[in-house]
Length: 241
Image (cartoon, rainbow, N blue to C red; front, top):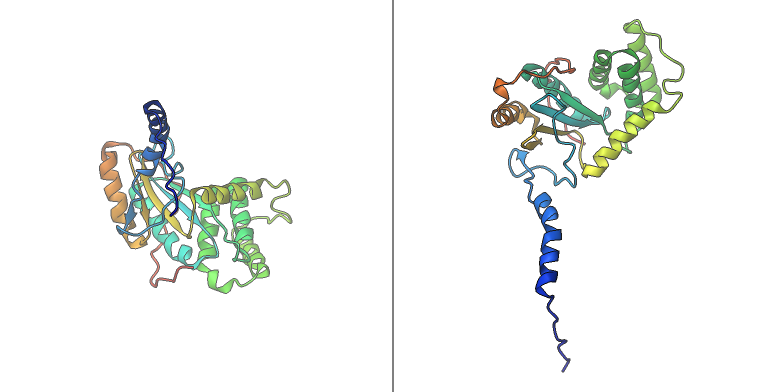
C-alpha cells in the first residue's frame, strides 16, 4: 500500500498574498469575448488595441491581407459602413506567410499612404482586391501596380522602400496581430471605450456598429472623420482562407 503524503496548507497571510496577486489576472480573463453572431469569434490573448482613436467614441479595427479572398469580400462592406456612420477605420496589415505577393502589395500600399495620399492608398487597396483573382505571382503584382501608377498619373519609384521604413510599419502591424493571437483574416472588431465586438459575419457589421454606438452614447457626440472611401457591396460572397 502506498503512503499518502501529508498535505501542507499555506498560512492565512500567504493565501491573502496569492489572492491579491491573482486579482488583476482574474479581471483580465473575465472580459467577455463578444462576437457577432453570438457564440462565434476567436479568443484573443491581448485586446488592448481594441479601442477608438483619440476623439472618437466608436471605431472599426480591421486586420487584412491583400491576397485573402475573404478580405476582398469584406473590404467594400467595411468601407461603406464606416463612411455611413462617420467613424474611423483603424486598419492593420497582416500578410499571411502562405500568400506569395500580399507582403509586396502591403509595401506599395504603405508607400502610397505615406508618400502620396491616404486616399490614393485606399484606392490602391480596393483595386488590388477587385483584381485579386488575376494576380497570381509577384510579377503580376508588379505589373498591376505599374498600371495603377500610370492610370493615376504617378511616377513609380524603382525601389519603394530604400530605408526599410515601410517594411517596419507592416512588420509592426503583423507583430500586433500576433500579440493579440490573431487567427484569421480579415479580423474585424467594432469597439468603443466600453466594449468591443468581433464581427465574424460581415453582414452583421451595420447592426453591430449601431449597437456599440448606442451603448457608447455616441449619438450626441460629434462624429469622427474617417479616411475610408465608400465602396460598393459585392454581389457574390467569396470563401474565407
